[in-house]
Length: 156
Image (cartoon, rainbow, N blue to C red; front, side, top):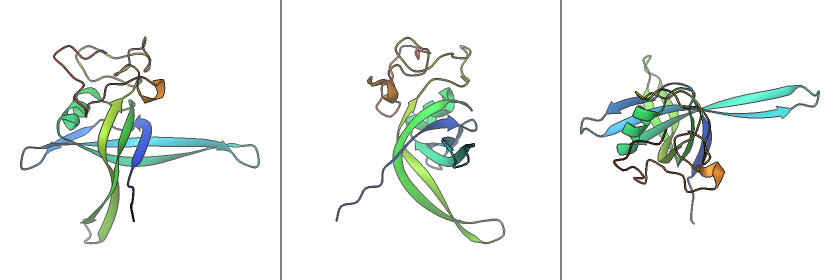
């Protein structure tokens, strides 16, 4: 029987990215992503629930996330759900779920962590978001995973 393990998230970073390197020198970036849903309950009161996701990004994409993303920035993430088991400080065995990103697309909003200052605006062809025509715009988008970078300055 076939199976699918696919996660797609669009949300905002709740903290600056944390880049580490494995003993073999491979970069790993951890993103903390918030997604929210809003609804009106039976009493007419507006409700909101926020879910927090831990995203691990590897390789060149990890370095780019560490360089260009910051708390508050919107991102589109595709990947798979992974379960990690560990022992906490008290010796209790625990499980943690994280998304291992296959694709990360930088969307507009939030602060920039570059020497150029901060960006304003969203994704769209005229905005100054990280990649023009992101997934919500129906454009090609430029994602870090597919090597959409060249020697030209990053367009934001």
